[in-house]
Image (cartoon, rainbow, N blue to C red; front, top):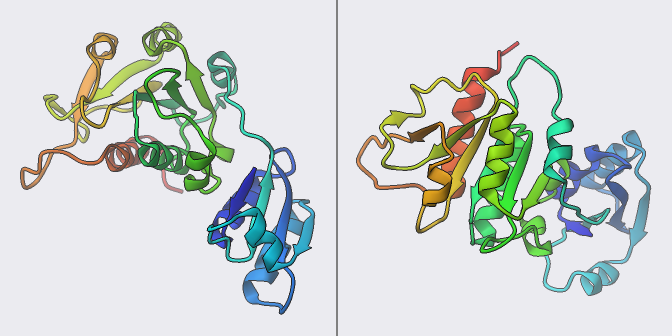
Length: 245
């Protein structure tokens, strides 16, 4: 799998040899960016291969690779039970993000990036009527999927039941909820469920939720893009649950 672009390459390399096979860079005049990438690759034990610009242009037609490409191992979904078993033990409570039939690939890519940035324990998506982790989505996620378990389930409701039985609170985000995300106590193992771009949370998923929360609008704007909304809520979760050193 190709992950192109200077910033995406720098972001991907620390995932290490378990997920990164090698780094390709355009041969030619040395630059600060080239030195930065090669030093980073050396630090994490990733081999660097030099390619001509025409080679990269042919492999990635129409893609702005900037002369840097990471060759990552093929993406694989993670079984939800395995993702749960891999949750680390620490001071911060674990949290998952569940996407209730997000259909836009750009939104899914944004949620992957945001969930990885805030250190989510995993992302859960349904198999049907949902965008999937396609090569296009993963490219737009600029390597963030390397740091996030993505589980694809047959039935999202049953997956939420599975997590609820293991002590996770199911928290749904919806604009008409009475509870503000800033007043809700996020200090608990939880699953944040975000809804479809047009329909929001499905009725089946709402019934699984222990609580519903909303992002309050200061000036009465009706709603936010689901990717942006996910970031706002995850930021508040981290603010409440992570102690600054």
